[in-house]
Length: 166
Image (cartoon, rainbow, N blue to C red; front, side, top):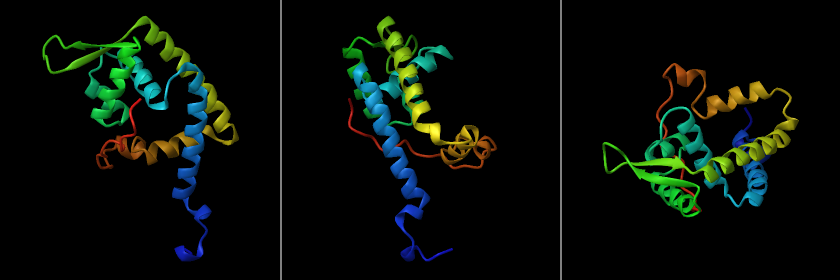
């Protein structure tokens, strides 16, 4: 292995991943702009839709865990989505401290439209990747969701650093 002081930053997988992530985030943000959704709003709206579709009304905490977002930031963004009439925060039937999330018909329609828009943006962005399955496998491992994680060999990760709500 070459001395790190002799390598270009462009030879670093971390540096390349950083730049690839920034380019992908810009592409997704541009795709979502006509829908008047930020990337974080999309992740939480789509996550609430997915969790409700595969279970019951998720709590804000379950949504934050699913999206790997800070619970306080999740609460702030959920309030923005609630003000837009896209979802409702409802008291849990058993525990009054828990807020369950329910998408409005408008929220569900927007979540499905946004999912299609983001999938199309992903198709365009990842078109240069020759083996999509291999990329997904590698990213799953890096995200702690791959084969090793299923065997219980990865440490629990803290939520991602919060970004500005909205």
